[in-house]
Amino acid sequence: MNMQMLALGFMAATAVGGLAWVFLYPLLSGEKKAEARRASVAKAEPVARQSDKTQRSRREQVEGSLKEVDARRQKDKKVSLSTRLTQAGLSWTPRKFMIISAIFGMACFATAFLMGGGLLGAVGIAFAAGFGLPRWILSYLKKRREKLFLKALPDAVDVIVRGIKAGLPLFESIKVVAADAPEPLKGEFIAIIETQAIGMPLGEACSRLYERMPVPEANFFGIVIAIQQKSGGNLSEALGNLSKVLRDRKKMAEKIQAMSMEAKASAGIIGSLPPIVMLLVYLTTPDYISLLWTHPTGQLMLCGCVLWMSLGIFVMKRMINFDF
Image (cartoon, rainbow, N blue to C red):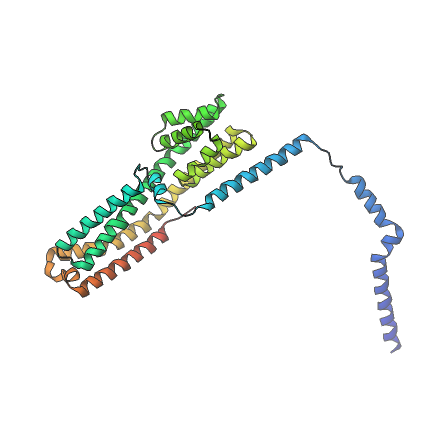
């Protein structure tokens, strides 16, 4: 019992001594003051240098430019019909596009109804022809135009870099690209020149390129020019790095296309089998399959099959398309 009391007393004394050593000894011995004095001596005094202020100002300008660009992109996510027509490279007005779509839809409705397709089938064909097909054509023209733009953009950036290194101003280098580049790159750079000629700053004019050509590469180009116009810096080096990034992205897109070609071919075969079988059956025994568009139940089944097939094609398209 006495040994246990002695052991507990020894442990309590050790704990109290350890706490006193940790908390009280530095205060009594002056070690805290010595550490504070050493820290104050070793601490570098703030020196107001013009270079530090310039770097801080440049960083703030870069951050502000990126925030402005991101805010402008996120402000309007819904693309209007006039903007889609511009992105597709068409000079039509929305009114003209809607009139042509309506006329085409009515013509398809009349043709399907007169050929004995029934009212429900004719309405479905008219809706697809007047609403779906024109917008699909717009999307196709837009994607084709973007591919042509991306194909010529790295070479155009290299021309600008060489012009800047040769001593030409940025605006003159853009004029060189606008004079010699193929369409649609030529038209987009002419739009930048015309926009700048009416008083808009060159950086903002280049940033608006993304509105007419909504691809990340155009956004990169606009951001680089906008930041350089506001904060300065070596523009030829920045554009040279941008050209390398654009070419690397192009290589990556081609590699992804090659790797996904097998899946795309399988999806194309699977999606085209039902219409092909339907056409072959119609050519061999038209009376057997004509019930699908002459009988009300067949028309309902045909509409359901079209919706189901469209859903399957959409799912397969989402599975084989890769964004990077």
